[in-house]
Image (cartoon, rainbow, N blue to C red):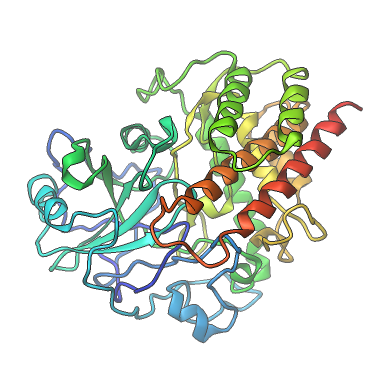
Length: 444
């Protein structure tokens, strides 16, 4: 389904939302997955051609681009009018500014256009491209054709790539495998592994319409009465991810099913050694203490690896999750790893470990961390007795991930450096402190 409005200019953001187009045939070529709409998948709503909506800025200084006032919100593509606090919100598509005509860094316009002509049925050149997500890792670009069809293209950051986190084939494989699962994901449209096309492998998916809540400011545009239900749907969707049999959907070989925590500790400590820009002894200390406290691990499931509120696109009416995005860290392992990381991100009023962020969940009305745990335990039937270990692991892992982001920003691998990117260094230090405090609680 095609989207409405016009593509925005100067939108460097961490996440985007996608929707499919009915004019795009589902029978893609051999290197592409069919577009399927299982009964369990939310219906993607139609609108007018060309918009890339809900692209909000979480720059390294964590300054959200959304504003509470309706006029500001309408400029970002989230809502045209703030919903009333006692009603279910409905998101209307606003008009967007024109995109720039010059292809952004990381896109070879002529080659990618030729690839679209050969691999995406119905694509009508010329194509226009807009970088709509700076990402914490991979880059996302909006693509629009002359008929108003729209897609999202994902590729690794510029420069050096870091293993599976920048493996476009792996991320495409995961989303393709989940097309018929009871997990909402964007429709896939194709994968290109030929680096001569645009300098790196990339994959293409449809554009899913709906809001993403990244900040408390975003959340204030949603009725307070709706926030608890949104939180519950986010938890329920995580339960759905963990209920999928990896073997049944062709992901049984995505990763080893045993020793997940040991592998995570080894991988991320190695990542720290590769990407650190300074010595932070606390990161090494937490690694040693976590390695000495590994709990008994449950049966392996699909683990998203970065599951949080702002990695889900909500339906425009806020009734459910429309799509889960950013599967770049997906693997097989202990599902409590996703729960622990979700709790790390699920900030509450009074939290101060990451003062530069004002997450959506600090807004009144969202369920608490304890309620998140209780709902997950009830819906999944899993014992959360060991979840505190995974909270500590989550803080530690997030510190390392953001150190890598800081290093790549410093090295220019995201192209033009955003103002305030140096704030990531402070966030890393605060996360390392939070990891130390969390692992200290494990000691009793």
